[in-house]
Image 1 (cartoon, rainbow, N blue to C red):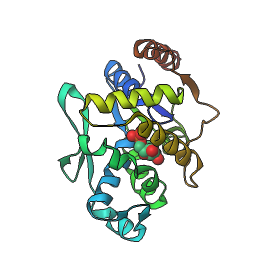
Image 2: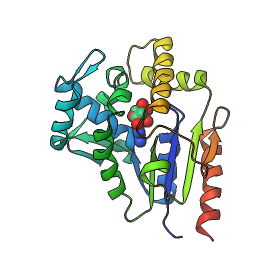
Image 3: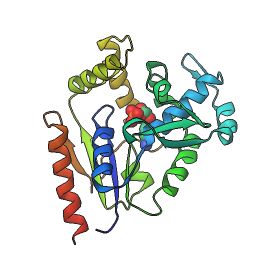
Image 4: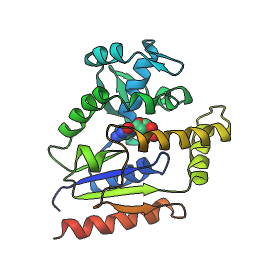
Length: 228
Ligand code: DC
């Protein structure tokens, strides 16, 4: 089977990473969660004090980008875990503090250039499943398979809420839902690389699909592409 790049974009909490992880496992591909990379930069900005309330010290963050090293290591159950300067930060980057500022950090064009270059380098050998907001439009416009994932706001908020509860976080459902709505708005309205559905992307609305149904649907598309 010829190796391909699978680009998965879509709204927050649509299950992109769940699908991407299973796809990568079945196909023996590398999986890269680009949202985790934006979250790691946001965590760095928070730790260094570049974020105060709604304000970001953009200049300091930009000039400090070169000191940020993002990598992935295999964690429990062979899941890839993001590291910030060699330290695993998976749990910190998923909390509400980072969720509340990541859309603003990811709207900074220098931050995007810094991360997009690293993401493109990861695709040189193909055999890659990458998820995010601009993978099919900016990072890999030539990807052989592009998916655009969506689901109703209520369902997405419930999924995210359950995830945070399972992690032991004390969260309020309405706060989780407004965070999702706000991130959708910022992600689709920002000037640089906004979330868009490219013309060649296949839409996957998974509001009422099980993970297995989604995986089977995509694997069929992969088979069609790779057997040409
Ligand atoms: O996929 P996620 O919810 O973990 O992503 C976190 C934020 O990062 C999201 O609000 C938008 C941003 N992001 C982005 O701008 N571009 C990407 N390729 C991935 C994520």
